[in-house]
Image (cartoon, rainbow, N blue to C red):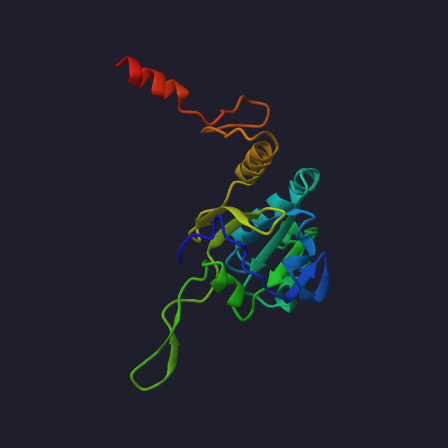
Length: 209
């Protein structure tokens, strides 16, 4: 699937679990014109790398909130699975204490719309419906601005956990650009000098050479 960057984020309404409470109708529409959204997908509940990511986003939740960013998780598990996992303490591999919403994409339409679903359905020669891989989500991460447009996306394979610090850095860069109109070079961090988009220096060099 082609990148979603620069395009409206796919919309959906589905079940979710927020701080131990199941919501029957959850949508990103509630944040439009109000907040940025960091939407991240993970493969499965009750696994190994996934809880480290969910707890890492929880640990940084106040920093995201301070930047006006709502954090939303998602996997292809059911809402009941999410709820059950939230009852298990961190020391035992659970995600108890995670407060932000976790989408239950049980029918896999959200993961598919965002281009992070591993595997596809197909029909064999006898007309039987099959899947060419386990239909779960890769580790996709999307930063969506207040207008509902995707401004950043990252997709990792299953074994590769993401950097929450990098996600915060990207949010800072986006917000700095929106406020100042200056672009952020490689490895830029908040408080550092940025660049004014200009070819004047290059033009001067070419004119003299």
